[in-house]
Image 1 (cartoon, one colour):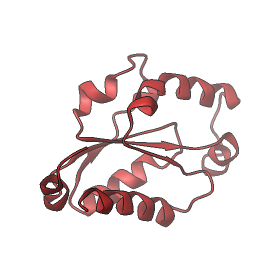
Image 2: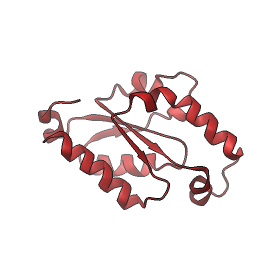
Image 3: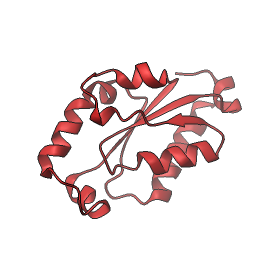
Length: 126
């Protein structure tokens, strides 16, 4: 866990990973707007289990998850069926096992996801 000086100064390097349509891009934009160094390293498309570490070298790893029904609701033209989501989760298993914060975004709005993540970050400095 990072020390409170990093959290207070927003110098944390944050990686956001998860299956497609879990909210990575939206959350990354919100984190950047708040002054954090954030990126999503497209780990769900890599066969290298620790690509998120190699690319981002993060201080914190946030894992966003989503179920298949919400994947389709968010991206109706997503192909590959539930097997695609299962494959992405398989590729993400190392990241999920090593994440600092896990959040299932399936039934959450963008605002609720942001609130949960920013609350997590605020609690780091306590």
